Image 1: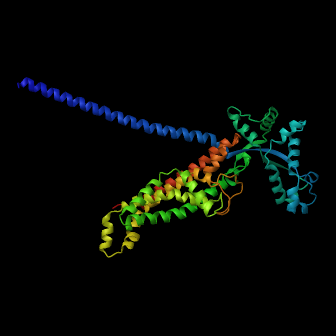
Image 2: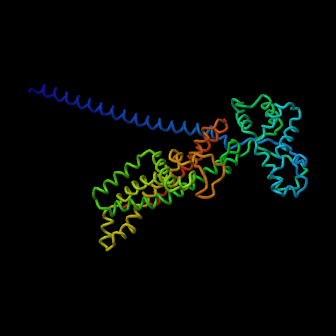
Image 3: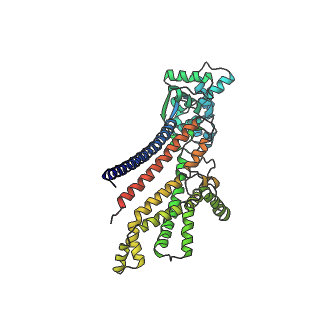
Amino acid sequence: MTDQMKNSAATSNIEKVNRTLARRYRSEKMFKTFGIASIALGLLAVVVLFTDIISKGSGAFRLASIQLEVQYDKDVLGLYSTDDVLDSEKLALANFDGVVKDALKNRFPEVTGRTAKRQLYSMASVDSSFVLMRRLADNPKLLGKSETIWLLADDDVDTYYKSLDGTPFTGKLSENQQAWVQELIKDGDIKLEFNSNFFSNGNSSEPELAGIKGAALGSFFTLLITLALSFPIGVAAAIYLEEFAPKNKLTDFIEVNINNLAAVPSIIFGLLGLAIFIGFFGVPRSTAIVGGLVLTLMTLPTIIISSRAAIKAVPPSIREAAIGMGASPMQVVMHHVLPLALPGMLTGSIIGMAQALGETAPLLLIGMVAFVVDIPGSLTDPATVLPVQIYLWADMPERAFIEKTSAAIMVLLGFLIVMNTLAVVLRKRLERRW
């Protein structure tokens, strides 16, 4: 082969290498571009989701109130002395609706006709009568006197008033009612206040009175039972399988089934809870205790798998050193393996609890979708949970429940963010390096 031919072959090889390198660099560049685009798309979806939820739900934290001068007229109320006011039975039968209607009639004296009056009376919330009853019960000297007071507006008035900054949403409001709202705005007799009902009330068919306290407490009790059962059982199962169980076909079968259970749809656990806890053991439906038992079944595989991974991560040299110093197998586990694996176990448990907090499907099957107005005070009281409450509100026809739904989602997301942050902090604080 001549020198010229050798040089030509070398040049050809170099060109091939350069083309291969250029193709590789293009592939790497495309891969990075796709990766960045995927992350950007995910972040954009999160931003759009949070923006939509916050923009729709922020209005639920404020509520419109109307200022009225109410007269605690003895004849209207049917109460004629402070003794009548102190009598809870007579007070409950008093005509406070009439007092509210008289206050609205005095505020808009030009309103006449049956239809117009009915529209006028619907401007104030049905809660107004109970507010007046509580005020009179607290201060019987108000009987026969008048006072100026802010009363909650009806949800249609509230929605219309809040929408005036943009495109007004009239909904079911008549032209008369819109004109009365404009008159109230002109006179400064309507305003937005912090909606304490949202955090202090249970569920209600009236949007302005609906709150999340009942669902939040139901979620708390349910998670309390879930944590109390699933964490010790899950950690004990993981320790046994990793440290003490013999390696045979039976333990392999159990491990495979635990891994498979983690991927079982959550509604299957609801069916299991319905058949066993309610059908066989007779646990009351719609209670936090049955909800906690069902979520325990659902959370156990997650805790067992994460706990086993944490135990596996402990170096064998630590076990060997402890055994070499004369420690028993139980002492090795309790004094050395468990403390070192605890951060991973806690992290997995909190993630499992966060997953349980957001679950809806299994709870629907055990009756926690019921309309529960009262605040649960114990584990056996009828209760619902936040995800189910969101599901119920999302199905309501009133426009005001849209913002309630979004606000409840914000609260639920807040809980989930707190729990995940707690998991990260615990892992960082308890983590030991070796």
